[in-house]
Image (tube, rainbow, N blue to C red; front, side):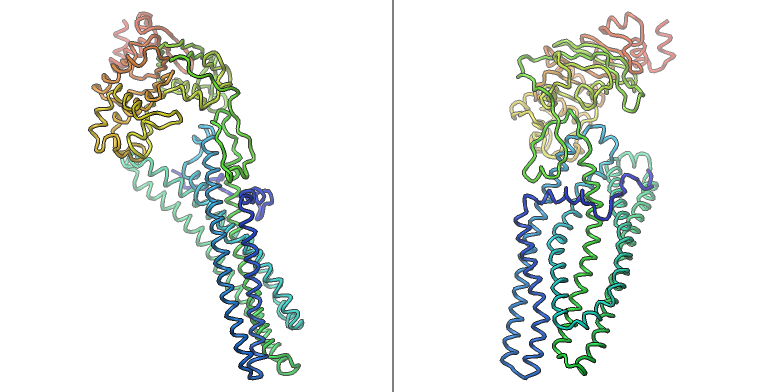
Length: 620
């Protein structure tokens, strides 16, 4: 397990990408009224803040200077009213933008999840789950932070800056020039900060994605880790990745720790110049003390929005990096065979692609069996490293066909192609005479019941797992299917029965129990094609006999494709297809293939006798 950086996690965009910003703001369109109202409130709150120094000036010049308590009382009351008004406007602004931010996160996550469900299965073979989790969780959180703490605040800060410059110019132009004398130094500090913080935030997001991917992989394979005694080595690898994440955050914090004190230093320098120069004006040229105090307050308020804007720039940096990764995921072409999913109102924003679907939906089920045809099919997962080569065979309606062969011969790949998880590079697969490309994928998969060697159960109850799927399955159908495969006895033994809790991936059940439930789940949908991919490999002998007796009844009149490793389970099928290095070498019944004395017979002898020497002796 490598702790080296993954280049796919690097954000390569600019500090501000107009194209990405446009796509992000598309998600705000459904909430444009709320955002507009929040901006208006923010501008109002900014205007109230501009009144504070002016009221201070009036209190000093009109009240304190002339010892006029009436004026002082009125100004103090006005100041208190402005404070209360600012608090109220701030509360409204926060409430509105937080609601918008939460709704936007809901829409964006729904959009990402919908897209993930439509991506090709091959995409998940290449992408660590932890990295995808980072897109849905952390990256979306960063986008939310930009919208809730950045958009309306940007307008407010700009409005305050412009208002302060106008107010300071009206008070005293000379003092304004003195204040702005430190701006070149502030520009240098800010530009340096921008350059360094961009790289730092990119490193933080990259290290976080790597940390999530490592955690997901190790937690998912903890039994294997402990079995192989890799705890210490994995702990060292985790320490390395964790340290990289810590160092990336420390670099970002160090940049902030240097920048903001420097900004405060520049602000203090400006204040010192104002006190030095303005104090002399109060003494010699006749400007009032209230004017000087107001100018000092305006100067403090002038540098505060600049500091806020610099902080917002950091948030913008993170948001652009997160947006780039999110839209890279959303721009990944969907599987042409993916089920077409309806988008919600906010879910349609920023999509940028059209969802493909099959050309035609099949007619309603008129019979309990379908016809499958593989016509000169070639397939490779990578380039031209062929897994299947010129494979041709047909499964007639109601026929039971088994596919056997050594590990890596391409047996399971046939199932993946039939379900349209992958598309063959050459040749055609037909169902009821129509190429797979003409089938709407959901309708096709609804007609197929699949049981895999590695059973996947979802968190919930036993009953919810047996009725899981797009095809409606009633509790009565689920109970009948469970009885057919003798899973009802197992279910009744569980605490809670049908309401018994199933934890993630069925962790509380044995492999045999999970496969019994998988049989019941597949048969509850009453499929026209039943595909069993090494489905009895983890079942004990007694359980296997129960399943075999049920399958003899269930497979009758139903097209069946059995991918088998244990050859003892397929003696009763109608035909056996033997794959070897991706090619069909033999085809026939068990008796015919045994009599032919070819590859199938050697496979049977190897499995029964256990060694190649014993198989050769038996053949002689």
